[in-house]
Amino acid sequence: MDSDWTQGYVTEVLYTEHFFRELSPAWMNYVAVLGGCQPRPLDPGFTYMELGCGLGQTVTLLAGAHPQGRFYGVDFNPAHIDWARRYAGQAGITNVEFLERSFLDLTSQEVPECDFIVLHGVYTWVGPAVRAGIQRIIRERLKPGGLVYNSYNCLPGWAADSPLQKLVFEMARHLTGDASQRTQAALKAVEELVGAKFAYFAATPTAGKMAAKMAERNANYLAHEFLNEHWTPFYSSDVADEMANAKLSFVGSATLAENHLELLGGEDLQAKIKAQPSQRLRQLFQDLAQNQRFRRDVFVRGHAQLNRAGIQRNMESQVFGAFRDLTPVTNVAKVARGEVKFDEKAFPGLKEALGQGTWSAADLRKEMTARKLAHLDVERTLNLLAATGIALPCAVASRSPAMPATPKQIKIPLAVNRALLNRMVDTLAPGNVVSTLAGNALGIDPIFAVIMVLGQQPWKSKDELREKLVGEVKRRRIRFSKPAKEEKPLDDVARAGQFFERFWSEEAPVLHRLGVIELA
Ligand SMILES: C[S@@+](CC[C@H](N)C(=O)[O-])C[C@H]1O[C@@H](n2cnc3c(N)ncnc32)[C@H](O)[C@@H]1O
Image 1 (cartoon, rainbow, N blue to C red):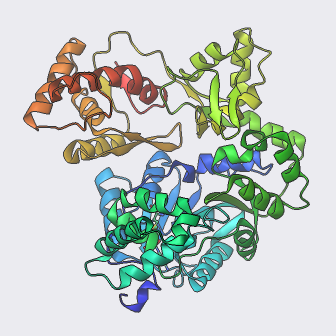
Image 2: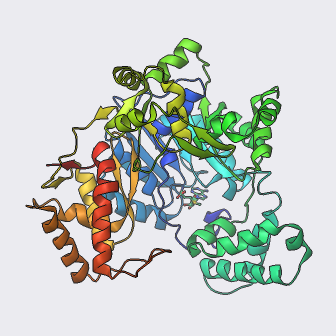
Image 3: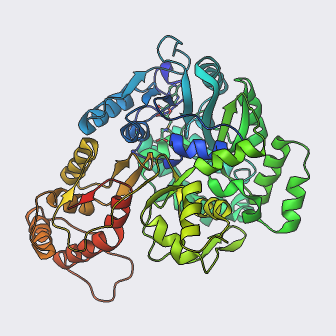
């Protein structure tokens, strides 16, 4: 491997760009509310640190979505930090700072005490000394009452397939090329073993399937997934014990459905989990119930368990909003157990309200009463809507005016979003925009970015804007990937027209309600 600053971690190829919405302060606060403890106040200001920030997209976009917060990204790979600083610079985001530091070296003087410390995709991939460094940073830099997000590959889900990592890791050592090429070649060689009737693969069909599925992923991502010397999947109870070294207790899961046992399995399974005498055992049972492979744990430092009234008060002020097009959403949603049904009578009114903006649970209850739908259990419904991804935890409650029937201009109020959209138009790669109402970022198809950037110049009719888009598609020779199913193949101009319609029917309402665009 490379020189010893790497501590067994892959550094010869860059990681990939990702944004993870579960790392948002608003999202973590909601998990705290569900877990019966106090969320961190987001106003007037707070401090947030991401350990192992990679290319820095998540921490940068979250800084953009929270101008009142101070954000820090820490990573020991100088190439990652350089990338992250450029990305933040291009987006004009100034409330994020990047530190090129190992978790073993970061000192208490370099970062203020934090309300939130997060690490995504790090814990499984580093060794015991580095994990001890992470625990030390949390111990020294997390405020009492502060929240931690830590995600990792876990057991028992990885138990049967973990020889796959060992095989790829060992085989890649003897191959040539950079880390990405060696990982890809090793995965290919593993696929050949599957065909050659090795008993392990016959006994563990999931491992062969996983090798095939993994082989389709980005090569740099694969190198970071498989080539780390200390790769270890954990039992949740062991991670809870390590986090206890930093005085942390488990609060809940940022995979929201996992906070609701009734969504995961039948009554017998629920009863067996609930009967366990401790949280760590209940979590372990839950992992067995789901054959869990990946956990997104939220911890708190100093668990002041609130009483019912306190929990209720926090839930009342919890804000929710829909990040997605609500048109196809019905009152039946899929969950691990099967399906969950929302109140049929109240659902159209609820959908309409969610289409107008973000709501605190208390205000949504008032709205439902005004709509003569007072019978709806708003709190439970919101929790289930969040668990099924229909409405998600947000930072600020706000309703936008109705979208004009014949808009004549798209305004993009935040300079950060104008910069992010311009970057997408330049690269034609998928990207994100930020919403201060959601306290989060939203993924955007680059063609939608082109529409928004063009739409800043007023137009007389939508046809005029569509023509501008078609002109841009021709001028820049923008190519579209073909959808899997298509009755009649479309040329790129016709497909641009299709995207244009989709922008107005599916995308614009979401961006409008979350304050990313204003329509004049
Ligand atoms: C799998 S990547 C995850 C990156 C990012 N959190 C994401 O999910 O996109 C793990 C990151 O941890 C960083 N890392 C690994 N060991 C480290 C250490 N000892 N000190 C600081 N950063 C480290 C790596 O450079 C890498 O960027």
